[in-house]
Length: 235
Image (cartoon, rainbow, N blue to C red; front, top):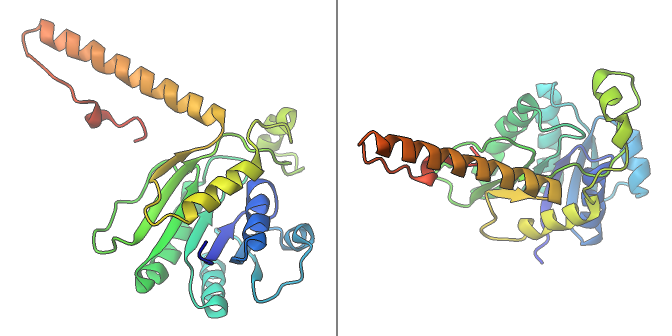
């Protein structure tokens, strides 16, 4: 497997931490970005060296975000794969947009790269000028992790499933390593059975809607044929 430089956000627990450990074990160079830097370094139990770069990260601070990306480039010379990992809720569109906005110029300068967005609801439009730049939206399902202990609304709602989620972060991390090695990675990837079940249910609902309107319009003599591709279940 080709050794690459990975830039991973949300790296101190759950899927992010599992991914970092597997990447380092496989010999990749890793810039691991987290809001909780001491917890990240302690969890990795590895002294920062030529292959491991822990970074304090807050996507809300664009200057700090840009600095962390610049530091990664200065340290490793390139960034091949970016994983935008959003913790315990679906990807924050502002965080995702901020990371993409700051990382794309560097990747375009390289002429190649792969951005993987965990829970990313939509993909930026493909730029045909850069055929070797790929993006993958990953629907991960609920991955096993321990949530923050602060008493905000999100923590209160997630306490009953804290650490008991259906998704296995080790298997999910292995899947991300797998697609990271592909020359033509998928644009969308479903992980965990609950994510697959949700997608299957959505597609079934769309198919029912297509059939309903096709039948109704044909009864009115419009001879309508609705193509399923017009209603992509993942858009």
